[in-house]
Image (tube, rainbow, N blue to C red; front, side):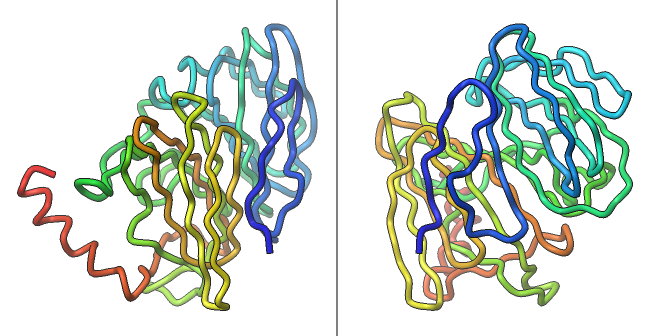
Length: 272
């Protein structure tokens, strides 16, 4: 079983070398100034998250000029463009640009739209050495006014030496309000770029693995528990995106480690 991979980061569209997920897919679009890419979304919805740079989008007759602004993922909140299913689109680079393209099947009729940084929620999850910083880009909880069929998208920044998405959790059964089924992917960047982290994954079938997180690696999870740690001296970033039958998020912690969540209020009172 392999649920992680390294992506190419060449000019043009970079796709997954393989994909164990049934709902989610991902590609990475890199272009230099003046280059263009065009296509059709088919039966899938996409969220074009501008990782760095600016681009002009044309989506079924709508034009969104010079979307973007941050130099890279560590330089502020993102701009994003929602591309609905069945849409013809083109993207023109306004300087060097890097765009993440998570996608999921959709049968919904939705108009394209831009998500600007003012609409992106941010905050802190965890405490002390499992504190991490998040951006919620397209979630039902933080952006109920933004329509989507399946996609849920955000970003997490894990500081030097810290753990993230800890305690490990899963979301593999539709049993609301306790748990919701979602596939999930993490697309990673590291700062400085020569650094690394570790991702720990395990599931109830007895499978367990650790893999090295580096720039342009991706973790693809159709089930199972997962957690990430940054090497000292380095910050890891991951774009996280989920897809299932509904957009309500509900997770279950590993029962052996879930008690750690209950320490967060106390740790924060102590200044962590």
